Image 1: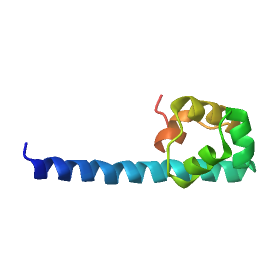
Image 2: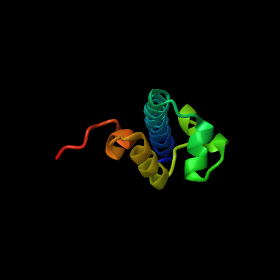
Image 3: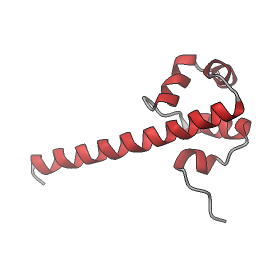
Image 4: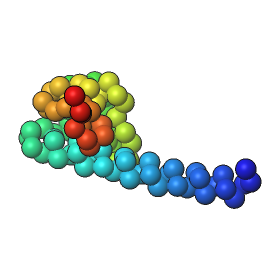
Length: 90
């Protein structure tokens, strides 16, 4: 594999990662707004900084799976939907 192909592959993955991160952020932000929960309150529940939660809501970073699981439970959401945007098929 030549260097140019490697670089293009990396850029494609980066674009896809950015799209997925922004989609997760939108679902998370929408769930917080519907529940009337602030980033500060969620941060206290999870034992993280308010800035971390704000970064998740903006799509700058992604919450770890354990945080997603806890948030889904507190917000009464399907964790699979929160993480992927798809309803889990039984």
